[in-house]
Image 1: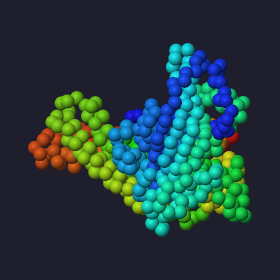
Image 2: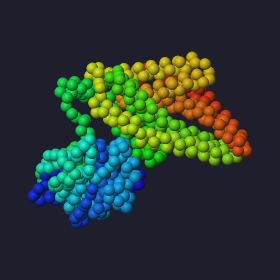
Image 3: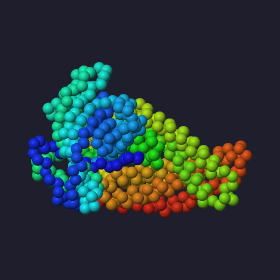
Image 4: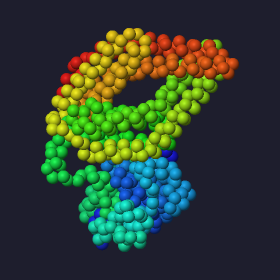
Length: 540
């Protein structure tokens, strides 16, 4: 998206009456510039139960300063967030721009975004410049005044916690909370590596400043951390048992990390699908499949009932996304084939008809996908996935070592692929054989995802298995895509005939797709042998 950048920033506390430390002499810094002071006025938006903040997301409308506008910040990693900016004209006060409501739907989940906190900041800026007067970093000394806003709410809605004297309290009605104030220092990298931020942190530490426990001004104003409040609750003996099953080196810990990362990736792709960004549907569909594969591959570690239900819901979501993706693939495949053919072999408006058909089918499927992403069923699924990732219901065997269990899982998935291929070989030629190979392809994909999930723990050997399974999956995928094209071409040819257009080109395309099926069948034995090598599951 335009006006988007990665923000690398660290916050510090502890500067009260002491003089601010000098910043000259830092690595690569030739000059420290003082561009003056700024008075910033910002209103932050969230749901009444602070769903954005719980996901590390902040949304504000800020006036004053050199970058006035609407700012949306999305988590990327430690000390990193993606900041998206829009001009003030994109939305009047109290009306969040539509593009930002769409980008936050996966976090707000149907709840309205309302003003939550009003912040006023008196900022003294210092720019760290290189020898060519280019900005490397900005260090800002902020005096902040925050007032928690208390919009009208029903008795069923939770009060918004506000901070007073360093502790949280709850608003008790329709009036604004008592303002709170503090000072802090922000160091933001503009160019280069984080070594400069490290040097700034060391200089500030010598002056008595320390890293802030709050990652944002909003979190500090509300007295809340930027992690989901249910992520680290303690549950006595039950919690200690859970920790034993998900501790360092255990298969439970490794699978928990997979579930959390894959859930975050799925949610992060939601706004890209809504905006119809290039390849977004495909990437979200892959994220859904990876998450479902993790639940099914490691089902022996997890309690049956909730995980089976989630796997079925992920199947549903993947099928909805698959409709749009299949149209996308078909159009690209046939378009590329037409480009390789001489004009004499593809007379008439073949490309135009195929492009028009696939585009219309894709738009219809994409609209259905977006409607699904706005459905209560989808929001319930996201809630359930986050609850699972926060505290997965691990069985006792989750205490076992990760390397050994990944080895067993890889062998089991590899054997499953071999079985599906044997079943395909025994199936009679035609639709049964084609479907059996399609099932083998899905098994190879699951084995690939299992190996890729193990790679961080067991290293090179898992990568080798993943590569072999990817080769098999892609070959069978090429075959399946060709079959789908063969199924669509007669319908397109019939429509062309009814319109009085030549149909010869559709026959040429059909023959080319049948040839692609035959070529995949020719290559399959060699790829199958490589995928079946047992040494790939002897992880070190």
